[in-house]
Image 1 (tube, rainbow, N blue to C red):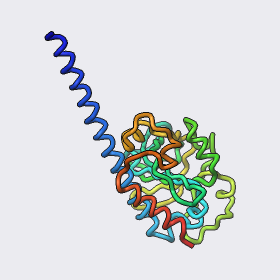
Image 2 (image 1 turned 180 degrees about the vertical axis):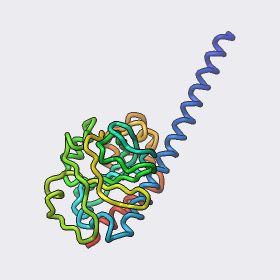
Image 3 (image 1 turned 90 degrees about the vertical axis):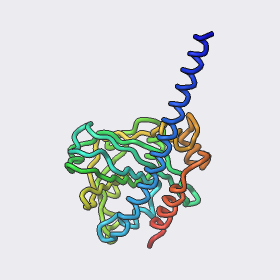
Length: 231
């Protein structure tokens, strides 16, 4: 009898630990959505040095990854998490799908501080490739440092040849960055925690069937809608 009670108490303790861990993770992801909105807002307030509006008008998806871990970036050496929002046929932006990015080429070497990353997807096929599993930038999709400034043309060679354009902000500076070799993945644990559904499918998140979500989601969607409609 005593053994049975001991097992029951142990099981309850494990359940409580799991609940607290899940709650903590959900709060962390809610903070990540809020940070993503802040990064986008701050970057778009510097039109002469930010992402050209023409890119966001034509974008099929945008990934925002705030605060990639501090330190000098080396091959396969650093990691960050963020969100991906996909544009639907009605031109509205989806709920955030959590993603992670790991590794990269020597182009990551910005040194000594945290870095915000933004990826602009020009083609839906690259988004579909990401949703299928491990997705390596430069191998599964052409990626290049994106041009900056309101006057940047949509017809540059880089923009015509690359399906994904990348940007970074570090030490207050914002510019295109090379991410050749970086692995981009859907973060299933973060999605389950944020939406409160274990094993939730990426397709359900993007279709708005994720369930509960933090207020920051609407703010991020609204900012993307605002900036992607600018002339």
